[in-house]
Length: 255
Image 1 (cartoon, rainbow, N blue to C red):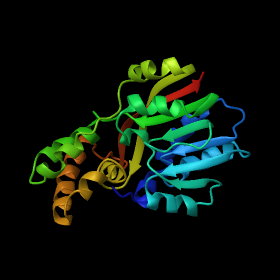
Image 2 (cartoon, rainbow, N blue to C red):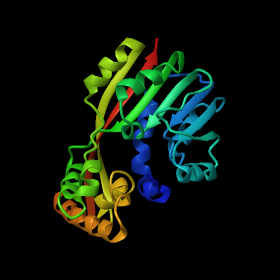
Image 3 (spheres, rainbow, N blue to C red):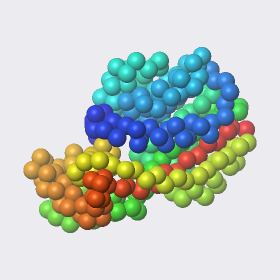
């Protein structure tokens, strides 16, 4: 799957807000080596570089397009094109930070303990993932994918609900952590423009589905999905659309 940094950053403020909220709960005073996993265009990496100006900061992402945007941003970091699921640091890290990336990966039961193992003693794993998969924006995406001439190509792709409940992550990480904080926040995004929720999903969850279709079929699928979204998320009298969006946060300090 390829990514479009401009499409993703069309809602840059809304996508960076959870990154700021996650970082606010990381209490490390000093850090020498920090990694941003799934760094995308570098909007969250910038926060890390500013928070720890003396640290070496690494941004890791599988998308060459995202990394090109990150490199052009001027953020003080080293950029690595790699699969976050298998990337390993050459030395222990003070902080592994990931904002809205790990939900694209399978097998969190293996992944998260492996990441904890790459931290120095007292190092911190800080993760934020969307947990909005039962909201209309995602439920209607699955429903639309299952109905229509495109179903045989994208129905299975659309059934993507990879993030478990908070208690799963507590049980997974508690044995590895001296301190563990897990919480959820539901943001109320106020979006401008026509088909605002459709435009939001174009940068993330909709993208792998349309990329699996030819151009004409993708356009028909997107139109059917957009019609359902307009009913579920009507534009208000002020011309704005409200999008509630739930996210899961966890900050674990290694023993």
